[in-house]
Amino acid sequence: MIGQEQHTAIKKSSSYLYLVCLVAALGGFLFGFDTAVISGTISLVTRDFGLDAISEGWFVSCALLGCIIGVIISGKLSDKFGRKIVLILSAFLFLISALGCMYAGTFSSLIAFRLIGGIGIGVASMVSPLYISEFAPSRLRGTMVSLYQLALTIGIVTAYFTNAYLASHSGENFSGVVAEKILSQEVWRAMLGLGALPALVFLFSLFLVPESPRWLLSTGKRDKAEKILIKIDGETAARKELDAFATQDVTTVEGSLRTLFRPVYRKALWIGLLLPFLSQVCGINAVIYYGPRILEQAGFTLNNALGGQVTIGFVNVVFTFVAIFTVDKWGRKPLLYVGIGGAVISLVIIGLLFQFGVTSGPWILIFILAFIACFAFSFGPVCWVVIGEIFPNGIRGKAMSLATLTLWIGNFFVGQLTPLMLQGLGSSWTFWIFAICCSPALYLTWKLIPETKGRSLEEIDSYWQEDYLKK
Image (cartoon, rainbow, N blue to C red):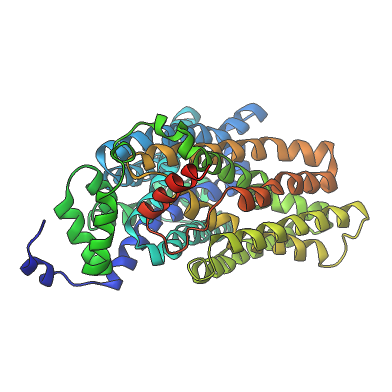
């Protein structure tokens, strides 16, 4: 315990809270940027290396293998060594990947650096929202975690714009052999290498933030955790958090992943496995990645389709702000009900428009934007909020690793199957299948997901205990 005189020297700072959470959210920016930047490089890399269809697919999908590796290792590493050091690792991997891709001399080395970047994505996609959920006070936790999703969407839009800008200036003359090659002759190198700038900012900023107070408590560093909690939310709130942590069942503080398979945490396990998976199979990445192709099938020209893709990116960013401003006011469940319901309706209508040939005019784009908007204030941010809250302290890293893994599995299936569905089933059934896959999330929200607005992580853990005892 730290003394009373030290308590008075520590002052609550809202700006400190926001700055630390914004730094952690930069992991989401890098995640979004690295995921979206690949779309502008595929044809260029295929041309410069003379790739066949298999090699082209490997160039796109190799990062996914890295993501899976990153997710698998990040849970155990973050529980053992802390959240901060693993975030630093992810920033370092992003940096190495961006620079390595920019200067790659062979296709094999390009693949190797893309794989390294994928590991960084996997690590950041799990540890960034985990860190924020443990750092933020309960009354602001939903808002702070939603910053991660906001940063992710901004990363996607930034990648679209930087790709377009660099492509428009390719072919111009630049002084220096290296600059000429990177910025003009093989502009895909600049597209991929530009990620080094935000990676550097992320890396150096992380040295200025503290460790997660929840992780410090779980490793017996109570004094350090107490100082951070007081600075985040004041002495009274910090005392409440510390007392709640002290009364926890020791098996939930120091446990293995087997703890999740105990009957008391069975609901939490199902939520953690299903919610991230369903958030992907609703078709969001099909729209993000294959938007131009879908819009071309609706009769848009290529230039208009790409313009529509940028519009999709902007809507994704704007409606994420709805979650930021409402998730801690209205709660998690209302946003999920409205957003998922709106997404299902939008998907069904898009399928009907394709089915009846109503492809002229703005209607297809309007309802695609409606789907994006519904996802952006519900599934997108609230999924990260919920899975960051529902697991016990001592195994939260491992548990979120498992939950995030199901997200990447869903992402993989959508990425692999969407072109086949568009070609074999057509646009109508593609969107109807996404609507069918999205619908179970409404039942999951109603039946299993508790409302966690305003509850501390320890209170949520106690809820599972009490809920189990009622049976």
